[in-house]
Length: 500
Ligand code: ADP
View (tube, rainbow, N blue to C red):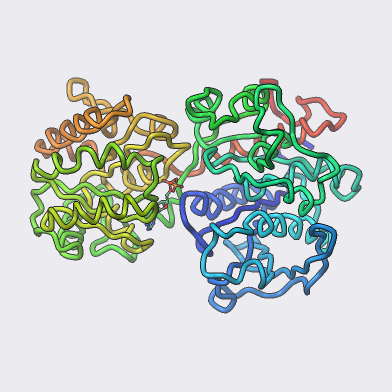
């Protein structure tokens, strides 16, 4: 099989835009398949049919009536509904009322069972549809059991004899760690726990993420920098010894954004559409945002936007340490996010203390998110670690200048502005430290005073190519590497990929 020959790929994710979203995984799962499809490959998506996904709204049709799926020692039932991500890209929804008909997506005590059922149903579905993929592309711990199964319970299954697996790590911090019983549920108790001499814990728990890394034919993560970082104890979340063992099959591929969906010239949610040639029009979005957020309506006040899950990962501890000092400088903050209750409390206090300057929306709101990207002057992501980060790319596309900590994908996409040379597309700081964060924001504020400088920064961000074009080719290259690694009796050269 040569590189120009179309591949068949099953792409599995726990969340996919526009059907369900809590974070960046959904954006990626809703856009990367389109870019792979555009390269001529037959890529199909699978996800659970959560209760909040309305079959009527998305025109879903049942393609497989309920069929038995092995779970533990019994059989569970699943049906398959089919929808569409874009013309030519089917989405298969695994249906089971008991496990998926709930308000939320995650955080249930039986999440292990829920995602085991999703994965097992997806594999069994393939046989019933008689569609055998070359590649099964798994994303994050929810789907990490599949490479494990392909090398155990399905090892001698002729249907999957030529199927290879790719496991993409979107965030190493969420590993899906459960107890022994999960091995029984997944039907792999006979193989026991995993063992690694440098990771004693691994032989006492079922760590889905570790299994994906261990069993997948090829692994990747979502930026080159993060692919390097996770090899170290600081970022390795205790799996760095395993990742170092697997480094020959670990790649970094930067996420992209969907330029059609994320487009300030056509975005229906924002007050005033605009493009890089009409930046003057952008100010209407800032004034509309100030109005909606109940802040003073004044285009000259610098406005910082934040859209984020409220977790330790995202830097809210160091931000909390300096936010009062920052507000005392006179700027405005608009924050949209949900997460840890103690950050909800912290941010509510700030909003109460600075009612004209700080607005906090502790909710998930896709429409408001677009208004913040389009109306803020600066977009803040002071993350402790960041596998890729999409917020900074969307912000740049909408003319908001990013202020970030130089880690993971933030380091790969934002270069610090140097006023002497005029180079850079944002502001970044290295040490995970409150005053380093403070200083980066002060530098941004200083440069904001110079209209021409600022315009150039905005135009540079808006002109950058954050589309999937380059990364989609890299994924296809990795798919061929996975096929080669699957152990087929062919040489790497036959796949059109060079030896690493
Ligand atoms: P992560 O996946 O770690 O949450 P990313 O920056 O990769 O972070 O992606 C976050 C995505 O989720 C972006 O599209 C961002 O706009 C969106 N998002 C995060 N929080 C909210 C929220 N409260 N309301 C609307 N969109 C949100």
